[in-house]
Image (cartoon, rainbow, N blue to C red; front, side, top):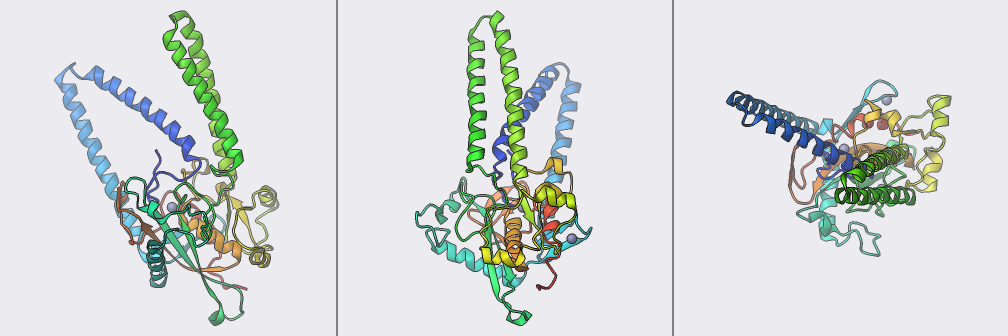
Length: 381
Ligand SMILES: [Zn+2]
Ligand SMILES: [Zn+2]
């Protein structure tokens, strides 16, 4: 199972369901290979036993060192000036948005307000977005982010209106869209009909595979060979379908930046023509001012690193949701704060404690935040 160092819980992305299965299968294979290896070694001679113990000790020490490095990285990234930062593919610079005391106060006040409420949303008539769910000892805990912004409603900086955007990482206990909170950056999420249809097809294949495997285990050795071939073929088909669905999910991630240009090049414009994110909660009047300038790219184009290996959950954390909404509204981001809400949890990357502020995560957020912050520091027109 993929885990997000900042989100601190199971990967929230729609893609996790697919990746999860592949990872489980990979792990199973690895484990069986390891146990096969160890079973041939154990009992053969004591030298090999000693070698194995030494190797284990070396591995343990390497793991400890890696964990320590991760913890140190989290501490480093949690510094105010490091809160939201990344290298930008567009202009070749590193862009930064700090966490200020003011943003921290706003985030603290939000947490306090939420704790007193029944629902996480002021517009939750059906009562489905319960605050208490985030305190579930087993599944609870969520990174909450606030973004202080300036609007373009007046011309002088001193009179500009301050706004606050809020976002949670991933889903709110299974829901991507919660009124009053920033929407997801992916159009294709697990609750969209396109996704549901594809998942159903994949699940049907899984059932078929299970049935065939059961039949093969009961039948005589002659027919089990045919069944095994059929199972292999179906598994390949399922793998290809899962991969294709995963690619479609990544295709649906559209990320704006604060860049002023209409487009980067003719080809980019063509590529992005069907990538605009219609799930944005920005009002039409907000967008009207900015539409001429808004540049949105597919997540693969703005990711700094190997875009063919996008980490599961990339684009689902609070920081990218906040920046996207701010850019689409034509506002200017001033400061950010991300804090943990829910029970304290211990993760590989360290402890998540309620009310403590954390920086944007290393694997998922930082490779896209540089692009998203491009030109964010410029004065509004
Ligand atoms: Zn993140
Ligand atoms: Zn830039």
